[in-house]
Length: 454
Image 1 (tube, rainbow, N blue to C red):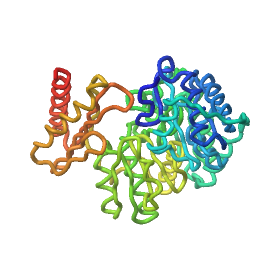
Image 2 (cartoon, rainbow, N blue to C red):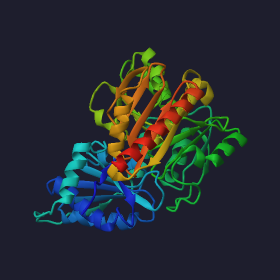
Image 3 (cartoon, one colour):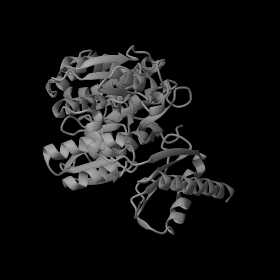
């Protein structure tokens, strides 16, 4: 009935052809069976127009499977994860497609600690969904609404937040998403002067596309610069990710933000491990290794899989940062607070804080490739790269990343959600990065053509 459901980050796709009420119903019932038809499932969703429909279908499956449903309503993803933990729910589910367009939706599952399901847990759910469920609960679950959970989250964040004595001026772009109901209040209560853009909740995202990428943030960049603000913070629809604009109105590469927060954690907590994805910049290594930090690179979307290791003090991939001392979930809201606190405590600008974090030229390109041939093409690319000279090492955790002796690198990986092969290139000089892009393009197009003709 279904192709592969769980991708890089949960289930995601179009509401017409994949993430349908039928799928939601079966997912709810399958989640209940996974929990042996007993326990409570916390359910939240972002403000996409299809979410009420999907929530009702999912809840029907949950209670038909004998589990109780706790309805948190429209909340940011961090609130859902936090709520799952403090409510002692067995599982939490966020109905969201994160930064995808409004025509998409999806599901992301969390365990009782608010940590995203591990791949083995996702696979178990998927196996139940693909099989015919022949055993059902002998009872119907209960439904309970918990509208106060956002307020509880806000109060918990504020308890962890220092008073912002400098009255830092912050421009917020809430993307017409769930951050609108939470972030302006938290930052203003903490002592910031805030101006919020796109802060009316609207599931069609009229202000800008949900993804907080540089090409979508020209307005906030202009406002930060023209209003002499200290910082700009931009979110996606469910606020698990945040993008940073410096005081000059320039977009800050997220890898540099990861390095900055990792630096602070190492200076405060001492040596520890930073888990990050294969597509992150070497600027992170250059910052944390002198501080006796260790770096562990993993598959994109799977930084949470090592959070049970007590040595891990941060897990992060571009846009999404998990601080285990706060919670086991990606939290763009909490990350925002940490950055603003750094500005306050150091009496510094964003640019000042980033002086010691290198900035290396990097690019990311997508190449269409039919699903049937994606992995075959990556296999051919791996074979060809094995004959490269000046290679320091190759990582084959998620596609293949080839690291050269001069510190430059290329990463080739298949998309987990689209019929595409992705190319990432980084070097210390722009000319070298351009050389890698040219080489990478040729390798991909030639390999795709070869495997399709074979």
